[in-house]
Length: 226
Image (cartoon, rainbow, N blue to C red; front, side, top):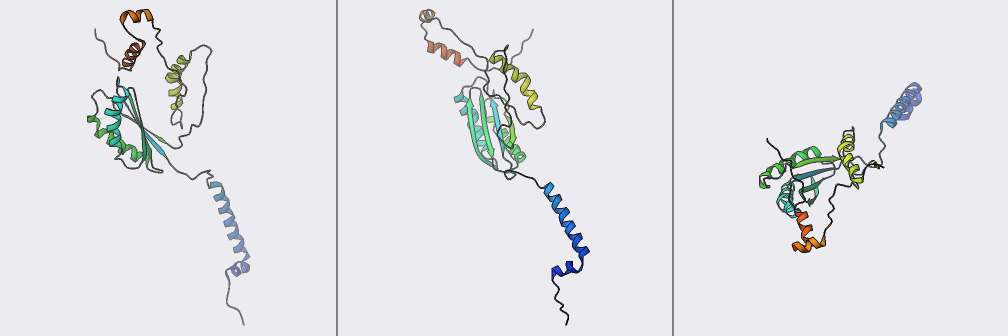
């Protein structure tokens, strides 16, 4: 009596050509998959940071914190997708760093944060410049460090050259997100005090330091007529 129970493997045993064709198809698909599968050290994720920079020329850190940073933070906090925020208030400058949740749409977050910022512009002092929003997507770890030195230029002159010439060119390179300066030396004023003249005018070194600090700010460019 003939056994009618045919197993799946019996089909390939009875049809060797079919078995060879199926095996070759599996081999080809395996080779194609092996060459197309990505190899990553970590899972593919997207993390983004939105930075809001606002300039108020001549304002000290306390004024910047109270009249610029705080109102902007309160408005930005209402946006969706925010993980946490940090802020710094320096002379004439307010910087708010918004860290987004993992894999949250950075374009959507940037649009919403911009809307929140614009909604409180009328609450800021009249002399405040338009806030500048920038977004950084991807790894926040520096990919490359470049060192610069010169036997002719002073450190502050090197910094000035890097800011005016080198930094813009690096940021214009395709694939470069940002180029930052570390250890830069900016121009500074060194004042030598004459103790005899200070005593004659009834002043102290602290008075001179206070006067210099109160007038040390970046002012907007003016115009001349005539």
